[in-house]
Structures are given as C-alpha cells and as structure tokens.
Length: 163
Image (cartoon, rainbow, N blue to C red):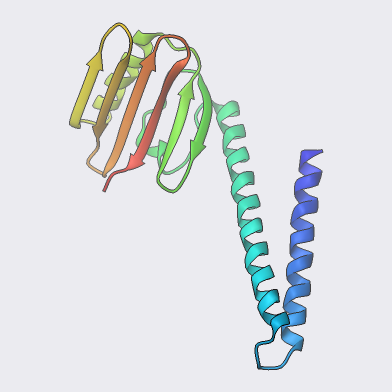
C-alpha cells in the first residue's frame, strides 16, 4: 500500500512538472503572473520530489540496516562493523547515527576498543561510571565519533565529519 502511494505521488509530481513546463514554454518572453506562479509551483514540486526521494532513501537505508545489521554509507565506511544488534539509524549530510538494541556495557566498551584500534585515536575522551559510559575521538580522515551507553536501552553511536 505504501509502495503504491509512493509511486502515485511521484507520478503526480512528474505530471505536475510536465504541465508546468508546458505552460511555461507556451508563454511570451515577458514574465507574467502565470509564469511566476508556474516557477513557484515548479520550485515547490521540486522540493516535494526531493523530500520524497530523501524519505525513500532513508527507508531503504533502514531496510538495509535491518537486513544486514549495519548500514552502508560514507560515514559507516569509517567504522568497524559492531558486534552489536543495530536498531534505528538516521543520516544527514552532516552525520550518521545508529542505536544499539539492548547491549551490555562491556559490549559497548569492547566496541570502543575496536574504534580505537581502527584509527579513532585522536583527542580521545572516555568516561566510565555506574550511570553511563561514553567514548569520543577523531580519526586522521577528519571524522569524529561519539559512542554512548546508559542502563536500559539507551545506547548508540554518532559519526560526523569534523574537518
């Protein structure tokens, strides 16, 4: 059902774009109210299409994470694959985050060691006590990582481009 709605929305957006471009090409060289409105409609439609494509990409990434346990992108390529069950992931042009599904504190600490051994050893900060664990560092490629754990299901990693 969602797949059909997605394709219908894309089809309607493309039809609207086609109609707008046709109307815009039929008018004279002087900008009229209709042309301005058409240009605004095109911009809104392009924004809507961009949002739909981004949403579809995020859903695909989430599906890949569920199937493989670890999503593939420029950010995760910097990290060793964790030996933890991945939960929700999210991305933007600035960074990427993944939650871990009910890990033990020692598992998260072991992953921090993997991160250190994998090159995240610049400006490291590690804080460990009864109520939380946190590790942050950068690698030589300019990526920064923040790994955290708290009792319950509050655990995850955030990676971003720091340079």
